Image (cartoon, rainbow, N blue to C red; front, side, top):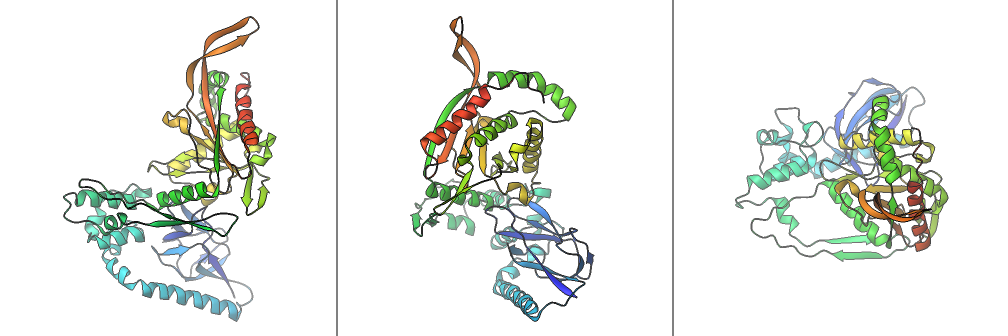
Amino acid sequence: MAEIEIRLPKMGESVTEATITNWLKNIGDTISLDEPLVEVATDKVDNELPSEASGVLVKRLFEKDQVAQVGDVIAIIATEGEAASPTQEVKTEEKKNDVVADVNVNTTSEKNASIISNSSTDRFYSPLVRSIASKEGISSTELDSISGSGKDGRVTKNDIIAYLSNRNQNGSAKSSVEETTSQPTSTSVVASGNSSIISIKEPTVLVNPGDEIIEMDRMRKLIAEHMVMSKHVSPHVTSYVEADVTNIVNWRNKVKDSYKKREGQNLTFTPIFIEAIVKAIKDFPMINVSISGTNIIKRKDINVGMATALPSGNLIVPVIKNADQLNLNGLTKQVNTLANNARDNKLKPEDIQGGTYTVTNVGTFGNVMGTPIINQPQVAILALGAIRKVPAVIETPEGDFIGIRQKMFLSHSYDHRVVDGALGGQFVRRVADYLEQFDINKEI
């Protein structure tokens, strides 16, 4: 009988841990290869993890609501085969002891949160939410009454902070979370390619009477850290081009209804723009690179990330893999599927991994242009501005005249360590050329 260690896999870029939300198998249960074993939750996605082997579940090293780090052994499955080596058994026992030690260290906080875990309902609460509730003296009944904005009505950190803000609006009691936010903090950024550490001291912020304090949720903290890191790692330069997309607007207006009737899909501008971007990447492959120290990694695949706003106000970047191998119909379906899954919190970890170039549509919010921050470890990102009707000079064999055209700005931010103005500017100009040369007789 051999024992197979089941480890918590990588759950996406910037995600280092996950909460065990539900075990789908009990100890002693038989499980097949790829059969769902456990449900886990991160601040980006909720997901079922499949078993990596067939056999019998003999150990669970983490219980429901406990947080595991990426790479941790979370379960042991016994399979038919040679017995596990003594070394493996020792490592497994050591890991179990480590988990027990961690639990002992946190005995006090777990004890304080016990009233919350003994809720009269089966509602899921993350360890962070339970910890805040415990510190604020929120009973299980009171916690059960809080409306949740997370998946399946789960109470998020934002939900409980908002509840506490209203609960303590008279200012008689400040939460421990609020008290810590006014303290000065510092951030350390390790610059890629050298060993220097840049220490940044954030300013002390005074809280005035009547101010509302909103604790960042974990996803917002990760986004903030990632953006600060990107600005310190990459010297950003932005080039702008205005593109005439009148042909695209007219063509889409002509075919979108028939396409929706035939495919059951909305035909938006996003896949049309991505198609042009992919063509330009093929023309300028040095845009599709990453930097590792003093080495440039030229990517073989063209995986386009599309920044998507979530109902919570946070941002996530699902990735269209091998976008250069998809036609416009395929791109449309991928864009719609990923966007809908992002808004419904149904993205899988692999859906947000492996991007090599990113697009963000600031025009969705009525913005005409922007200066986007590079999504590391990529070296460029393109912002799509709003499409506007504007007066323009139209050149014809008979002479020039003024007409109404549909135009938009493209804002291209790039890493000046490897992308100079010539490459960055030529690339975005090529994207505009492909958009302006769009075939109005195109079939989809």
